Length: 92
Image (cartoon, rainbow, N blue to C red; front, side):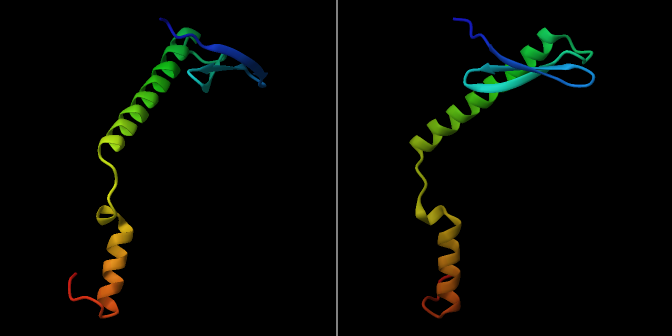
């Protein structure tokens, strides 16, 4: 299934038009006054959105498989440091 962008609206600048589109739930723009063809701008923007979504999905999958532990957080380090400073532990 091919994913398509949906045209939202256009804005007029002094030198060119800015065309707003939505693709996979995210907005992006293409400009009519650039030397880069509109089709190439669409491909670049959509590839960027695809890469960002893939990265977010991979991160979510990793975090689901490897939940964060308290021992691995910065807060645990601060708590250990202050416990040492306050004389509550000899471990540092």
